Amino acid sequence: MFTAGFRPDRLHGLGPMYRYFLSLITSSSLRVLRPGRSLHRFHGEMERAVVRCVPSEARMTLSLELSGAQRHMQREQAEPLGRLLARIAHNAAKGPKSKKSKTNPPEESEPAVRLYHNGEPVAEDAPNADAWQDGAVLHVGQRKYLVDRNPPTLTVAELPASPLAGFPVCPKLQVEFGDLRDCLLHWYRESAGDGWTEAGGQRVFTPSNADIGHKLKLRCTPVRGAKRGEVRELVTAGTVEAGPGACTFDQRHLYTGRVTGERALRVVSYNILADVYAQTELSKTVLYPYCAPYALQIDYRQSLIKKELSGYNADIICLQEVDKAVFADSLCPALDAFGLNGVFRMKERQHEGLATFFRTSKLELIGRYDVTLSDALTSESRHAELWRKMSANEALRDKVTQRSTALQVTVLQSVKDPSRKLCVANTHLYWHPKGSHVRLIQMAVALQHLQWVTSEVHPGTPLLLSGDLNSPPSSGVFQLITRGHIPEDHSDWASEGPDELCPLEVTSPFQLASACGEPAYTNYVGGFHGCLDYILVEPSALQVEQVIPMPSHQDITTYQALPSVSHPSDHIALVCDLVWQ
Image (cartoon, rainbow, N blue to C red; front, side, top):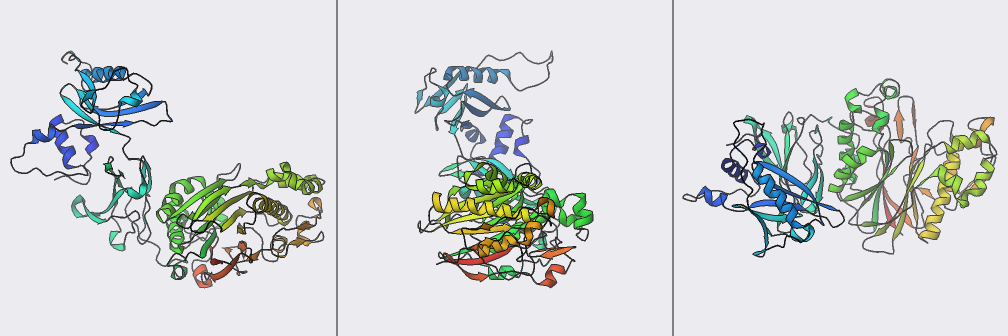
């Protein structure tokens, strides 16, 4: 009867009886009139007055239809009920909003307005917070409204703009007074004649090649127990587009088709290339001139990233170069749908940072100890000796303290076995090719901070350190982490020449091993390739069970270098399975 573009919220121009009938037949609880059953009987049923009343807030909101218009009245929770009832009566008498005209009829007298609960009138001196109880009945003249207090409500409902065939479409949904897991979700494909064909009821939908050129629609009904909230329908802004075909991570997913068992943890570390860097003229013309411009767009890359990450079925994911908006609007909704929760650490003075996700069925968050490394160096007593020695070189001191490098520290605990705890550290060290001495100082600060967390805050907790260290296996940073010591005469102290030379002997409180070994490269761009990324563990606590093979060199170089239409970043994800010792 109605086309796909029909919108129940655009019925305000129709007569009340016709509008009410249309709202019934387009609602989630569709009613069919039996022969001889009067429409007036439906019209005689109570309408809905929605109350949002949160104890921690001073004001409440009452939403209902009055005189052909939807009204949203914000009132103080402590206000006496009688004042709000008087306001409702006044609005009901005003009639629908229209331009002033001499031909308009005069205003009607205000109708009698009362609120009843369990058949008894509610005292007009009762505060609003107490008066508007679920199931109360509001009488406005001859009209009756059933009060629905704090129904489950979709506060955020969005779809990605341009879905790709073969790639998961993950809606961004947030529910107030309910749980997203209880929502009723139904997907529809656009079909011929502006109609829609149901495509399934699940949180995530993966369109096929048959959907190319068509839009998708998601119908969302928030639910809490027997309560159902207002239905929302979302339609993609663009049509489904063709995917890139084979991606660099497709073969890797053959090794990660299932979530690991209780004794194991699958870990991913991945620099996903921040959009704030991918969209610069430098990136498009100098760093990645070989990459098709559309493949650098955030929507396209995020489609690839979400498919890649979801296909790893990981328990812990450590990401670097994560835009704040990407974390909130893309990664969190997508990975939540696959059972992972995430925390974010923004770099100071920048628009990107670090994100750590963990599988909630296996792990729970028990502590966060993030720090900006330069702040820790200058303010915490455990770094006083390092700070004193380094400060003797003014040029080096200034360079180190101007860096916004962060260390994200998340302590996780096994849901099934609380004795198993893990300190997960995630970082992205200074990038400059001549900055090895700066990275050494940053890592020395990070290791001391992590010793404090694992020895004093959570004694005996093993460490997992991951991230983009911008350091090859031959570097002083890697030597410090895996061998535990850097001498004063190490060549990395002179990486920027004599002006910033500050020879120091540095030791590590940990003995860590690279879980994924030393790949030929984890970063592959037009002018450089090398191993810069690591997952480092304490072998006494965690043993490597499986390292997911890296993509083949042919896959990486099919489009010359990274990123490309088949790979969303200039880095390659490290993936491994660990087991508790």
